[in-house]
Length: 220
Ligand code: DX5
Ligand code: ZN
Image (cartoon, rainbow, N blue to C red; front, side, top):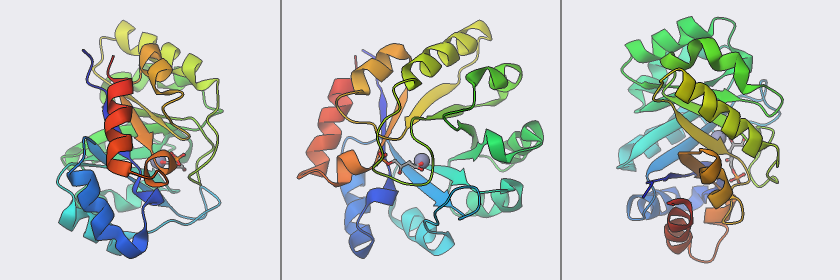
């Protein structure tokens, strides 16, 4: 059976009860903490920054997966390493020298991640796939939680899976945005390894159960 990883997005947590929500993730079947950093320039929204990440680092007992939606991410690679990021994803669209950026992430001991906007073809990663630990396919336009899933994502996941196999890479495919129990199975069938879920988890009546159910639905 495939062990699909579930990564609840902290963006959808209750920041007045952040420690409670982080402990909920610790004690659930979730695998990663997904942490969205938005700068108000690369995306039309500002999320949170270093002080919140310090709190996450203090309490999180699982992999911290940081998704940078910021311009010029190279400036902050060392900072995010010191704040406990285990996976650091930069946007393809924000990096002029992606290869250099990925080497800098590796040099800080983190796993490398590359996120792709909905309009960016997965084929742009063909020549660099062996340097990427996680490709984060955006299934919404980045910037906000709670948006609807873009259906053409399935095709991108299948295409990326083919590129990964052809290059004998070990890259994980993560899907981020609008993930629910309605699309989880089909995403995993297409080749997804990690599912991010924000609103679907935190706006549900019982987030712990929702995570367990999603994990079950997604582990084929
Ligand atoms: C969007 C973020 C996502 C978001 C997912 O810019 O990158 O990680 O928090 O939230 P939902 O699952 O609510 O779409
Ligand atoms: Zn994200």
